[in-house]
Image (cartoon, rainbow, N blue to C red):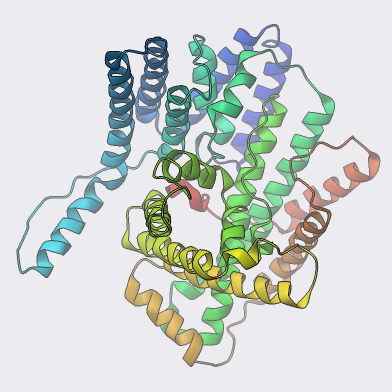
Length: 479
């Protein structure tokens, strides 16, 4: 049940009405209803994978309970027990994630490495269907265990509240990745209907639909056509396709995140911001403070800091960055191209940190020549890196980049895409630029007013007239 289908809109309207009329008496009723509709929502994709969702949820809830139980004993034995419980929870959840997402990849990687040493390895690959959203709900569940272990959050005895937190359908499939420290307390108290919050949620939904249907899916028509037959296109066309894919993946994933946050607000739940105008970044470091923020912060708190963060030697800091982005690349997909993409960003961050970190501490977001140059360089290297993300093999990615710099020619034009997508990109860029200059948060609440109502009604009409309603699933669903 994709967010962009009529089935989902019917589901959302019906559950919204039931939630605030029949299940709004107390917090247990609200959490029970959220859990039931979230289970139904996830089961709509494949009901067999509900068991994985429940195993992840119940194992981490239980782990949090027992970690806390031994937290008040200062003996070496209790410390050892807490570590054993933590590692057992990691083993269960990451083991499930590894099997479904990475098992075949590691087998093929072993075969490839063996071939380099003239050793023939023969293994049969297993037919595995990747459960949708497994990376997201696994990280959501594990954040609770880590936070309890590190005494950042108190474990809850309310299993219904916890299950609602982990399975909450707006963020279940593709984030934002919920953090128990910030999200779980919202499920422990009753939510009251707020017209301004609901109106704010509707605005986010509409703008998210606009980003997905009018920008991402429209651009996808051109990008898929070019990349699907890149051998027959020149560098000029491939360069435009690369730029448009940068915009496409932001509009696709950013649009989904905005829809998820908007849906959450309709049910009185505030989800974390996931994007903050990433293509206005002046450095790669700044880009990763703005792009997929829930995942970036997750890796920062639960991987980078435990490795030592910035508190170790300069050499170790660089190694830590390399590890984090290698893991980030693998998280995005079980394929070499994602690892290469992660390595590219790691190298860029290392170079930036080594040679430019002190200079970049003092830049501001004012319009200036030096900031324009920074913006151009950052967007350019991010765009080149996206080629490795989008194209499956290293040879093909290098071939495309080589053509971009060496093979000029007449631009392949799709007038339908260029006209409609061009208008949509202008609207998106204008809104992003306005928010950037005003340093405005996309998820900030605004009071209802007639002008805003007219503006978003016009945007909804634009979506109906010019949106692509058969553009397929969201890009990040595969992760």
